[in-house]
Image (tube, rainbow, N blue to C red; front, side, top):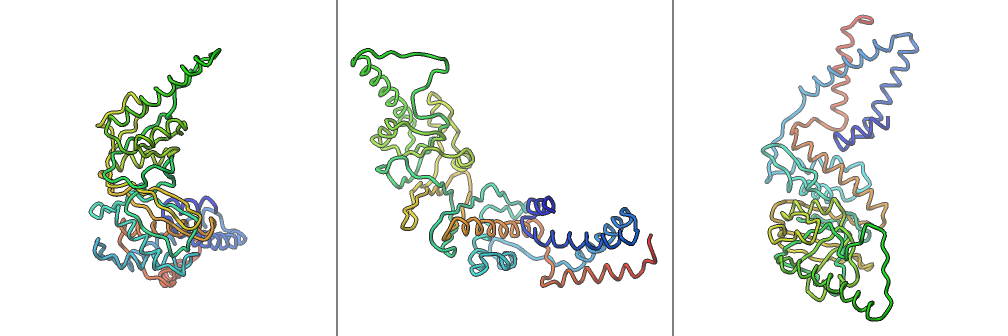
Length: 354
């Protein structure tokens, strides 16, 4: 049952409860037939035959709908149907709009394809679930590494690094003796010069924003701030790849490889604050090479945020499925009844066990 529900979730994205209930009812009927001495293979064949009849009935009663960028009222109704039984049902219209906007922003209606990798759902505690919003761009759950760095950068040239902003550490065992103040000052100046050279390489490339997968040394952070280079540290691998695709940047593994050609471009990067807790996140907008979008989920607690996130994902899956296959059937149990009548009528034509 768990695997069945997981398979339904992976393939369709919604209807997991209905699948489990249906499977339970089928197994219950199968148990009654087994008690009567009918062979399991005969029971399985009977269920397969009934399934074929039900599918044919569905194909005969389905209706095709026209979907376009300008006319998405039907998609909205489908999303609202999916959200009707969820925790967020009190604001299902708002969440249906969010789902439709997110899918249509990244959908290719000609090929009937939706790239889910371009839709990011971010949950932030605080506010009400009605405060959830659709954002054209990428939201990073990070802030700039220094509080005095600029909070908004327009016409951003992004340098994406996967190397730490600190001096290299020898991979072999070594010892370093400092016997005098002069030795310490010499070591400090060498370290300072290393940081200055790193920051200068980034500045010379023309970058005005630095995104790093690893952390910064405090000295490097201080120098970045004084050189007017806003920076973000500890950016996750998934976010790094998404940003690289969206901005057209090349991921740079070493400082020696920084060149202007490897920088990414986007319209703006700005820091946003949320609520009285002053939670911060970064908004990357107007990316050159991508139409990536983000849905920002708000809620009174982490549990509500997580549940709202799951509900929205189900609605997005429903809208995605509608674009891939724009046929619909009636709701309110009418479809199930039609299939049941068709299967029962066919069963009446069969005498005994075939």
